[in-house]
Amino acid sequence: MNENQSGPAPRTLTEEELVRLLGEQRFGVLATVRRSGHPAMSTVLYRWDPAGRIIRISTTAGRLKARQVRNDPHVALHVSGPDVWSFAVAEGEAEVSDSPEELLALADDPADPTVYLEQQAREGRVVIKIKVSRLYGTALDIP
Image: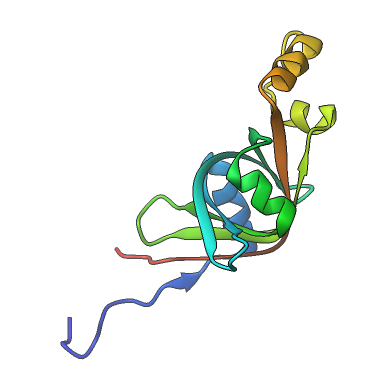
């Protein structure tokens, strides 16, 4: 490598690659906005609906991330790719919902939906639903 070069530049991921990366992963880092305007970040388990461009995250109603989304719906989810140099970010506006439909959308086909929803209610579970308006990310293709 020439001493004036820093190596290959990252390339922008295509829409198809971004959608696939979001679907292949399950964990990401959710960025919400604190009242001070500073970001707050937390690792979350999520489910991606590419057809609806919706990301769903289960949490409890009293958790900081749920309160922050209620105060300011602007969020971003960062998802790591297969190597340290690749990632996808999904930005959008979020809402917090305790609707049975949203809670069931996160379930893996529960045997008894009524029992499942009763358990979710006892735990104070809600869904942070992100309507994705922008996807971006990069990869660094190193041979």
